[in-house]
Amino acid sequence: MYRNFCSFNHNTRAPQASIRYLIYHYTACDLATSLKILCDDEADNPVSAHYLIDENGDIYQLVDEEKRAWHAGKSSWEGREDINSWSIGIELVNPGHGPHYRPFPQAQMEALAHLSLQLINRYQIKPWHVLGHADIAPTRKVDPGELFDWKWLASQGIGIMPSLGISPASDYSLEMIQKLLKQYGYEVDSSKGNDSHIQAVLRAFQMHFTPSHVTKKPNIETYSALLSLLEKKNKKG
Image (cartoon, rainbow, N blue to C red; front, top):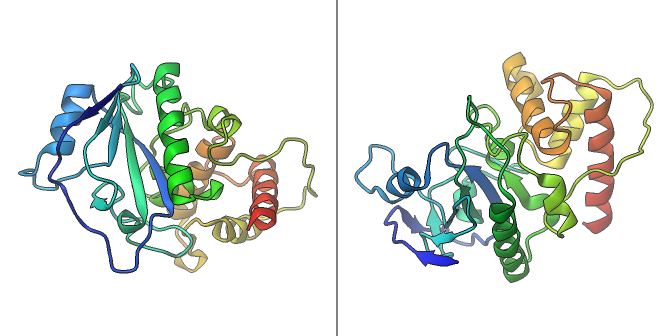
């Protein structure tokens, strides 16, 4: 069921910006609190999203799609910043990481798939441009997290997941993985010499693509997944 709520937390997209990305978030609170936060234009740091999906599958449109909602914050993908100007943001009601973090209910996921397919077709969004907040802001965010069912979404034609069974050579290195992460789209700056930065990027990637191997460390699963994803991305270009 679609419901309309009005959030005034938006502005105009940057000149020449077009919608290229679909960004998923969790709210880390219940529905009533989520609506209050996303529609509160008097907050010190007002935020919003184009859509909010409740756990029962109800969809709330908060901001018109042509407007720039304030959901991504400081973020980047493929070297592009101001992701808000280039994206549609969807918030999912979920308690978030902590003692009550839980899988996203099927009704919620089916509503998300229905809405996402409409947006993907409307704006010709590429599979590798369907992302989580953690992907575009790995040092700040962890949502939607490792319990979000990216694999099921990919089976519905939304996003992309690595193929199983690829057996690369085992002599990978952190430097190789950093290079592949950057090629795929993550912000990786090896010159920073910042272990916490690369750990955050690895965590974001692993929560999305290898959720059973979230170690924040380079491993064969991460290397294999990156090779598979880049092969698919390069083929579909």
